[in-house]
Length: 402
Ligand SMILES: *[C@@H]1O[C@H](CO)[C@@H](O)[C@H](O)[C@H]1NC(C)=O
Ligand SMILES: *[C@@H]1O[C@H](CO)[C@@H](O)[C@H](O)[C@H]1NC(C)=O
Ligand SMILES: *[C@@H]1O[C@H](CO)[C@@H](O)[C@H](O)[C@H]1NC(C)=O
Ligand SMILES: *[C@@H]1O[C@H](CO)[C@@H](O)[C@H](O)[C@H]1NC(C)=O
Ligand SMILES: *[C@@H]1O[C@H](CO)[C@@H](O)[C@H](O)[C@H]1NC(C)=O
Ligand SMILES: *[C@@H]1O[C@H](CO)[C@@H](O)[C@H](O)[C@H]1NC(C)=O
Image 1 (spheres, rainbow, N blue to C red):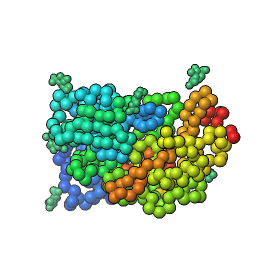
Image 2: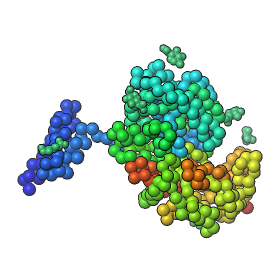
Image 3: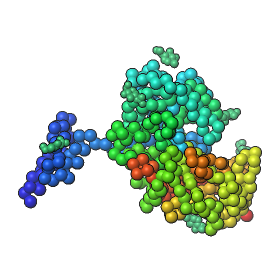
């Protein structure tokens, strides 16, 4: 009993002294292995350097098409708005020579950073929408969510195509390292450098509010999750192929009809707006909703005058848990002044993983409803119902009356 009281007393002193600027590192780094009460060691050790999770506020850009947030590169820090993309692995920002062609307004000036180290290897990345960026690799300190990752390899884009209308200055890839490049993506270095307590990150997106741009309605948490943004339980699915955040789904169904019932693979992709799937399956899905394909827009339209109750739910079953998307969550409404067009958020595309398997891309229309967690330690993806699951877009009173 006495021993315990004494230890508690010492512990309190240690905690108090830790608040003083001159913390005794000798005490903190004491040899624990022969301590009578070993479990006292870890909390004391942590006092030396408290590692906590960090976060980045995300803003809606362009009609809720995607979210951007601030990162910093160099010393002193230069700021950039980037799209955080779990569907790619590179970090790049615009170089001065790209002008407006790489999007955004901020450019990286390597000659203004004391921590810049040239690398010089050429860089080139092509995205699913046909856009691309080209440039060269650099090495500098990159700060995300208050975590300064030292010696990070990234690219400065000196030319680009299809990027000029974006408000973002670059892209930050959060997928697995590319086998070919030997490059360590930023989040992996953040964990390796001991800047975060856990090797996980989580995304919260609030659905787009019509006509309100740049509201702070998303949050990326690095080194943890934001438990205030989802409702438990979290359902995990193992990553089946490290590249994308790829996992198996049991099925995809519309009401009780399965449009995919075996060999259903999906990736969680914050960099994709819609929910994309293999064309034959998406055609079937849209047909069951009543979607009509119009090739000129590569989009499925639905009749906005139909009764809402005539639209079915769409369910993605992952690790035997049902993730339901309801009509007002998947119907996109465009237009003004009683001239409206309605489309679905389901698009067909023949996307494949590196093993050539067809994949579904669960983009923002899914991730807005389900908080997503990415775990590089246990190699799994987690989903939980978002606190904004029930937030629905405002529907003009003239719609869905039929
Ligand atoms: C802790 O002390 C023991 C006994 O003196 C020693 O064998 C061991 O190597 C020490 N461990 C560390 C990490 O210093
Ligand atoms: C720094 O780089 C920019 C863009 O390449 C260039 O315009 C500027 O003159 C350079 N500044 C110095 C001091 O070299
Ligand atoms: C970046 O530069 C630092 C300092 O020269 C070096 O230690 C580190 O290995 C470099 N990182 C990469 C990815 O090349
Ligand atoms: C950018 O906007 C201009 C003007 O609206 C348009 O002509 C151009 O096609 C757009 N570029 C891309 C890549 O969408
Ligand atoms: C659709 O899903 C929602 C949310 O889970 C549920 O409240 C509703 O009853 C479902 N509708 C049908 C027709 O199953
Ligand atoms: C909608 O109506 C308002 C007021 O009559 C008008 O100012 C606006 O230009 C109209 N918008 C469109 C897209 O027709």
